[in-house]
Every structure is written in structure tokens, then in C-alpha cells.
Amino acid sequence: MVYPISFPNLNLTFNINPIAISIFGINIYWYGIIIVIGVLLGLYLAKKDDGLHGIKYSDVIDFVTIAVFVGILFARGYYVLFKLDYYISHPSEIIKIWNGGLAIYGGIIGGVLTCIFFCRKRKIKFLNMADYIVPFLVLGQSIGRWGNFVNQEAYGSLTESFLKMRIYNESTLEFISVHPTFLYESLLDFIIFIILMKIRKNRKFEGQLVYLYFIIYGMGRAIIEGLRTDSLMLCGFRVSQFLSLFLAILSSLMYMFAEKCRRKNT
Image 1 (cartoon, rainbow, N blue to C red):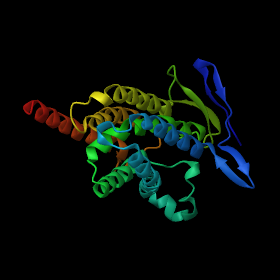
Image 2 (image 1 turned 180 degrees about the vertical axis):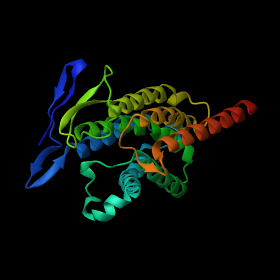
Image 3 (image 1 turned 180 degrees about the horizontal axis):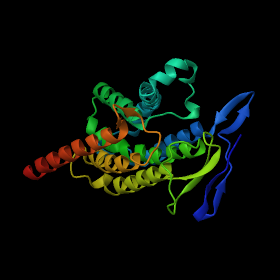
Image 4 (image 1 turned 45 degrees about the horizontal axis):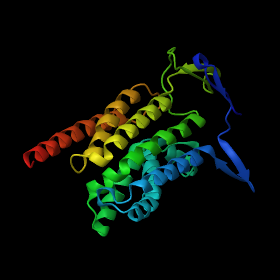
């Protein structure tokens, strides 16, 4: 059954079936379509930067072709790992990524590892490739979060704030008002995208864009994660919140070190 999703203070109501279309009995889900849209739009925009930072667009295409599949595998594996008790009892659910359950940090880990090996094989500087693709990566994240909206997942705690979102809680069999944390992160990601696009052609040092991404996203995600009700937990801690803060601090230190080296050499 499809339940309405509404934003009462904005007078908006949506009735969205997670299944976009069925073809010969095969269901095509909005979740997957939205992810594909994010990837294709990112690739389209990235083409205009061909040659930036010494990176060829053809290399970006080859990298993304590999990284998308590796990233999805890692994103799913990361999510399953922290809900292992459930998936051991329900192994058939592991492959059902269309129902949600892709952890962004798992995808980032998979993407970074793929990038390291790819750049080593193609003899490309890793930080140059990372700076080239990171604005479009975060744009894809911004778009991809709307897959959570369709699936009515990745929402936050109860609230009566202006942006409250009303959804149906199947556990309590009632409508509840919650923080639309998917929307918060989507907006955060889009703001980061705008910032990175503004400075991409005038970066001061290698790695500047990717460091800024982890600094801003890490701090923002740590705050947003604190509002969520479905956080992956480890020893009582929110895994993504801890990792976000760690990456933000580490990237800040690396940014300051790189800036210090730049000034020293100018």
C-alpha cells in the first residue's frame, strides 16, 4: 500500500509508488532511476571540464564505469555489515538494494579505492582526479537522496518544525511528523556542489576540492546524522556521525598542511 507523504506547512502532498514501472513482470524502482539520473547528469556536466587539472574526460568515463558498480557493492556491503544480525536471518534480502540500504560512506570507500588503483594504472595523479570528479560526486549525492524520499526512509526524529514531513508509521499505525533529513542532506550536498564548482578552475593546490568536500560534508552530516532514527550503530555510537567528524578533522589538517606548503613555495 502506498501512503501519502506531506509537508503540511508547504501545502505539499505526494503519493508515490516506489515502483516506477513494471515491464514483463520486472519492477523498475524509482530508487534506481534516481541514482542513474544523478550519475548521468554528473557525467554530462563533467564533460565540459575535459582537460581540467590534466584529466581527460575519456579517463573519467572509464573510471566512473568501474566505480559505480564497485561503489554500489561497497555501499551495500557497508550497510549489511552493520545490520549483520538481520541479514544473517534474512540472506535473500541482501541483494534487494531497491528497497534502500545503501550507505554513502561505503560507496565513498569503494570509490576512493577504485580511484587509487585506477590512477596508479593510468599514471594519473590521484588528487587531480579526485578534484575533477568530486563536484559531480556530491551533485549525485544530492540527487540520490531523493531515492530515500520515495522509499520513505532516512528520515529523522519527531518534530513540529516548519519543514516537518508527515509520513505513515507502520509500527504505530499512525501518521507522524518527522525531520526530513533526506532533504537536509540533499540541500547540504547541493550547496557543496555550488561551492566546489565556483573554485574548481582556480584551486590553489592539489586536493583542495576534495578536502573541502570532506570538511563541509563531514561537519554537516555529523549534525544531520544526530537527527536520524535509522543510524548504523556500533558500541552505542552512530557510525556515520563518528566517521563524519573524523574525516572533517583529518581533511582540515590536510588542507592546512597543503596550504602551508603552497605559501612556503610561493
